[in-house]
Amino acid sequence: MKRRLLIGKSKDLLYSILLWYKFRKFHQLQRKNPPRKVIYTCITGGYDCLVLNMYLNPEYKYVCFTDDETYLKRRIVGPWHIEPLRYDRLDNTRNNRYHKMHPHELFSDYEESLFIDANIQLRGNCLFAAADAMHGRDVFLAIPPHRRCRCLYDELEECIRSHKDNAEVLEKHRIFLEEEGYPRQMGLTENNVIYRKHKDPRCIKVMEDWWYMVENYSRRDQLSLFYVLWKNGEQMTYLLDFPIKSDKANFRLFHHN
Image (cartoon, rainbow, N blue to C red):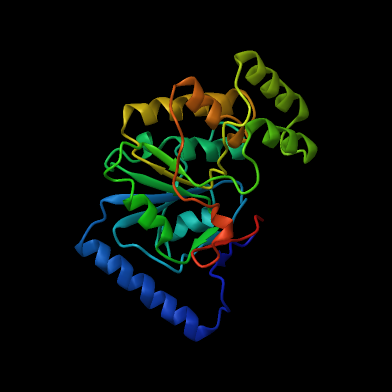
């Protein structure tokens, strides 16, 4: 399947030329002043098309991990530096989640990272301003709230109803949480945008435990992060006061393929 680049506007010649100059200038600026922070995404199995962001922050290196040969051959797409997957031993979803949960392995040269799902287009400075607000705080992980649920168990029931994972796996996951004594109404995040101080030992422990859950229980990562935080005695910090889907001025979400 031919890869598409999602830009959110008509692909006329003039607009394409303007985009080309915009990204060229962006990369020239970064060569003069190498970025000290990183924002990254991951695409596996053709699940998403790569979104070209309308708002660019030159303080961040943009990285996309993928198994898509078309993107890999281009090496740079818009602001994105294209890199091959560092992990591809499981199904496409879990291969994606490995990259999502291991910034401490992927970006050892950086202190902080932002992860965004590949179907999100950044249209303003909101996300970067929220990340900047975390610098002086004792916060190693911050995520916007879930758009609908405030309880992991409610989300699990929704996953069962909508067949978002194998029914037996989801039931195994539910039984595990109940046997662990995980409480209800502990909060929930959508995990499509994640800020981390990924070298913090607390962050590394939470990320490794989160990966263990996704590898061995449900692949739906919303169903395990708050359990992992609770088990480690940590609290979630909300990166924003609202789910990103409600802020159309700063974020646009495209449908998955």
